[in-house]
Image (tube, rainbow, N blue to C red; front, side, top):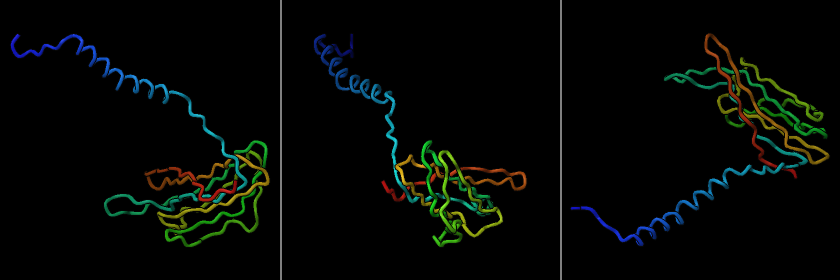
Length: 173
């Protein structure tokens, strides 16, 4: 037929075999590797300093109108056997200035216990870049606590809520 390319059958088999070897086999291996459950290693520590984003307000609309929020900082001891001590809970503003130090003395958190701290919706001092610094320690190596902030407001007919998870900035293994 006119305009049709005819290839020898051995050449076609070699090309299919090459394509299969170069592309299909590695693709199958990758799919199998990704399908394997991840073996998440549990990190045991004696303490940490944790940075937690908090938003006393966010902006909306073209004019960047502030929407004020109540912030709840939640600290949860995830270790089922050992207590932890919360040694610092500091609230900082947009510029990093310390606004509130919530603790006068360390607070002991029982195994699986939790504690929370509130920044009222009327407290507008933190700004959109507010944050908490939380320090904790333990005499035993324990699982990392879950530290997060929850922001919420139901002003007028508009309601909004979201969370931010803390990030360790310093570990004490």
